[in-house]
Length: 253
Image (cartoon, rainbow, N blue to C red; front, side, top):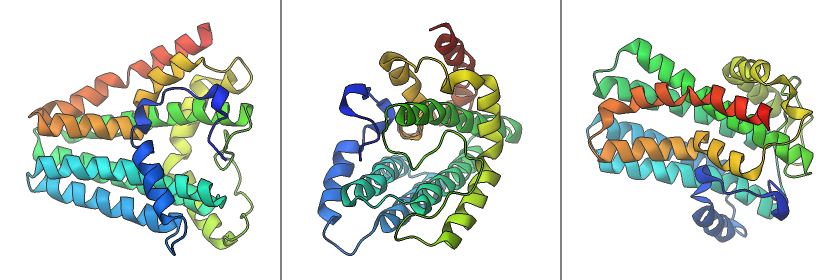
């Protein structure tokens, strides 16, 4: 199942790796490799990006950040091709993302002159950005009967799907709530009625897709290789102010 029906798809700027991800997932369709294996692959890619960043190999760091983004799309793509969606994969993906994001920003703090306070603010900012994007995106999916492994309100542990263990879902959902629960509550309180009012238009979703993790990592990669590493943390602090502007625009529409 696609994330959205074709008639309601928008240009997702954070999903630039999807074409390559589809090729990878199709090549793995008849193999022993599962979506979880692909998720482990993007974790390894993310860790290598951090390692190269800490050792001043910024081009290699940038390449592995992009590879991470592509594999991040490929695990879900493989699950959809095989028609084997799972909450295990959904929550493992999210938990891995936030831990890798933390390592990336710790690395940026280490290789720049940024203060630890600004680093924390920037990290919290990108998480809120991503949460807003996912909030609106999941609302769209549910509204138009798209991919439903993600829920608008993550308030209770879901029942394991066929082929996965409930224990794994319980553990990963618990970690998800620890890492994302606060961000979810903040965004929900900023736009409580989003689920009940008119869904965001395609053009607005395209603009908000710049808050997606893929686009965030692309920005970091580009700034690393263009000698702008000192500006990455200040950029994301400033860019987070657009959260309030995008929410206001959605409400006005």
